[in-house]
Image (cartoon, rainbow, N blue to C red; front, side):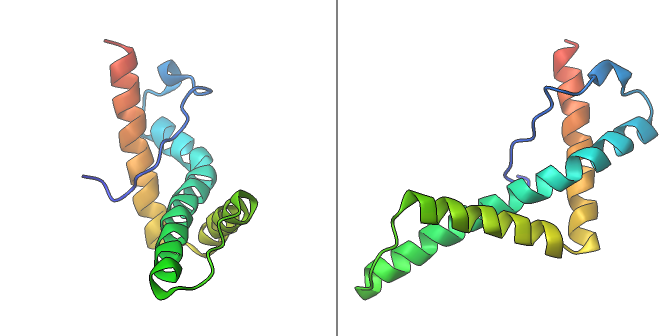
Length: 109
């Protein structure tokens, strides 16, 4: 199972144009910034839920406003994108290339 639990939108990609390794790498670099945000938002959502459970368990006040939750998740996504290490970026780019290859294979069956 992959450590990246995000859905990447390939709807605007010309999969037929992806032929060489360079093509796949170039497309993955284009998709990387949005994928980093999505990954950060996924982490933010899990963190929000854990914080809410912690507050609930300790008798604290829950911050259950949907706008607060959404703001927290979005900010976590942007922060993750800005602060991701080069290694994290490289691993995510490799993951994107794998997903591009799978998606291209599935669409050409």
